[in-house]
Amino acid sequence: FPQLKCVLDIQTPLIIENNEAVYRKIRKKGTKFAHLVDMVITLSLEAIQTWIPNWQGSSLRYSLGIKVSNFNPPANSDQKIYCRRFVFIGSFHKLRKLDVLITYISSLPAELKRDLKFDFYGDGPAREELENLVKMKGLQSSVEIKGLVESEKLATLLSEYDAGIAWVPHEIYGSNPSLKLLEYIAAGIVPLAMDTVAHQRDADRGFHIEFFSDSVESFNATIQKVFEEGFYVSKRNENLKHIAKHDYDVIAEREILPALSQLVGKIIDPVQSKRLTTLNQKHFKKNRAKEQAKSLKRQVRKLRREMVELKYSSSFRLGQIIINAFKKPGKNTLLMPYYLVKLVWDIVTGRARDELKKALGRNS
Image (cartoon, rainbow, N blue to C red; front, top):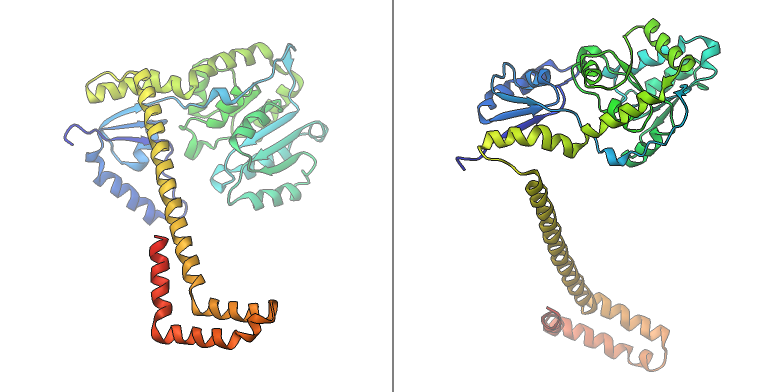
């Protein structure tokens, strides 16, 4: 396939914790096979270098997207949103430094903490450690580790909060766009975010975001600000207008398809692309249904064969003779010796085997 193009989609930086040998091995393979890649599309150009060191080929950074239609932000006729209920969604991993976030929360003034609630949704290896930290800091009334929630349910659940915290450590994830930030905005709640490079880009695109730096003083000041001064609903409504540009389909049509068209040397029509995708999906479902039907037929044939083999087996016939003799005494009891002799005779002469073959032939 000389005209075939290989496009690699890198969505996150390569992170291997506590195993430098594996990290180097993966990067070495990235360099080895880089010549097979015609283009890299990515959410962060910096992430490419973690997978393929010194990548010099064609690359495209595209915007992070969400399924906007999954969210249904409630109408708000107030002038401001005064934040009391806060939410965090994400992975519970040591690299995420959520223990630092919980420590920051614990340092909030006592009179302020009494009026605030922080819920954490997610899961990961650091979950137990975080739960223990909440207890150790005496934050049970303010902080709750909620665990995992299905994405569809979470989209609705987010709208019940006043603000979402986009806690993203600078060192590893600072240049990567934050999915949680877009989800907070789509849910119609106030976005609070660490002042990373990626979050600053979102602000440059027109989103209204309340920033804090990685310090307890800055975090506390931001929480106190949105609690006491509030966040204008007009800003929230502008965010909802901007988020429409971050829908999956819009990004694919606006950013990715033109680059792919240039790569293959012809225009890829988004409508035609969607139509072909739909046709492929229907074809896949149709073929899958056929395969499932064939599989069921094979299972039915197998079960029928097993039933026939059981019915004509010596052990089944012997059991049937004994059960009939006790269940329906009389004739069956008197003829029991005859049936037993006949069973032995059929086994010795091979007649039982012949009858089984005929029965299997009739049911094939």
